[in-house]
Length: 272
Ligand SMILES: [Zn+2]
Image (cartoon, rainbow, N blue to C red):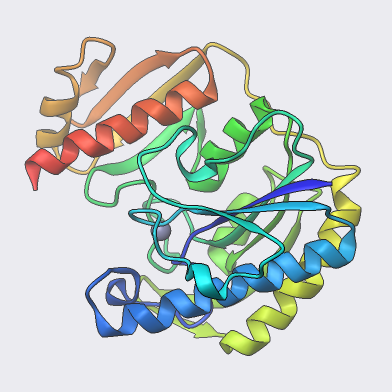
């Protein structure tokens, strides 16, 4: 089996504060090591369970967080941005599954560090009328390439909102959210043990998992964090403004919708 691991940091055990997710903070250097260890745990479990090829896609911030020299050498690292397919960089037709490690709940929920792509720009996102976070958006993108999500780890809020999208996937809870910046967390070591065991089970589940496929063209709706963001985004003729903070656009595929969101996220930097 060919598997892509897509790794974020907000759902990693022990991470509760933005300082732990941002370059330049002393705590970040420790948190990125925990992130790398959770990815290594997923790699070990996946190989044990029957994977023969593994890519680890760094998918947080600038996509340069995983410590390359500490990565399990049986996997290859996908890092850096911008790149095709964004968080799912490296995925292609022929992959048998995707594993989401360190993921977080969508914007507007009570999950730890919950957001969708860009916390300062996007308040809520829907595709074809269904509200989605990053797991759903990128799960749909992977689904178009035939790859089902077979494993996901993160906090309890993330799991509750994501399980209905990927009912055959194995979920591993790394922490219970007590607030945006608070959690009851497994230790990094305990989280890695749970992830390794879950990843092993996920390889068996992969055989029965179905890719998430959205009807096309995809109708995308977006609520912005401020009307100023909507003022900016509706300058792009592809977007129609519905009200002060709501925009809609049509995309040929989930991949195209995700690319639009990533472009809007980059545009939003001009308002900071
Ligand atoms: Zn992230």
